[in-house]
Amino acid sequence: MAAGEGKDGGSVARVRAALRAAGHPDAVREFPEGTRSAADAARAVGCEVGQIAKSVIFRGTAPDGAEHPVLVVASGAHGVDPEKVAALTGLSIGRAEGRWVREATGFAIGGVAPLGHLTPPVVLVDDALFAHAEVWAAAGSPRSVFPSTPAELLRVSGGTRAEVAADAPG
Image 1: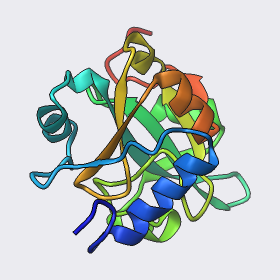
Image 2: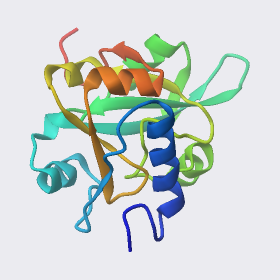
Image 3: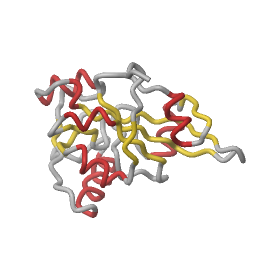
Image 4: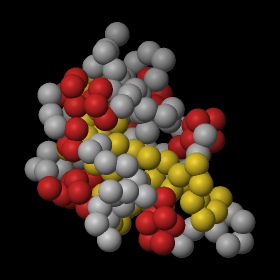
């Protein structure tokens, strides 16, 4: 079975197509042992946990009640502060359960990519990622990732660079 085929093949294929459409190399790699968590991904890839660009989806609600997926592409080395996300987006930020994440993004939790979403999300890219020359992001399944640079993730996701760390000063 080739990378991008199988159970999550549609999601991985969508990420591959989005990477190519954005002019980013399609360097998706599959790890049978899994890359669901930042620690799992770092072990599989052989990098620091901080180099894992984990995708955290929140349910954002506008003042008019409209819901929007909010994607935070964060360093795997820390958590995300929902209050910072709310202040940066102007949305009320809530937890997004697995079913909603799949419906809104087209990805299962553990495989949410920074691009290729069914519903375009509001995107924030963690400032902490810019401390690394190379980072790894999910590619549509809990077994697939791709290498990139923080600047390229910012570009291909259409995101805004922001400080989102739960444990950052200030």
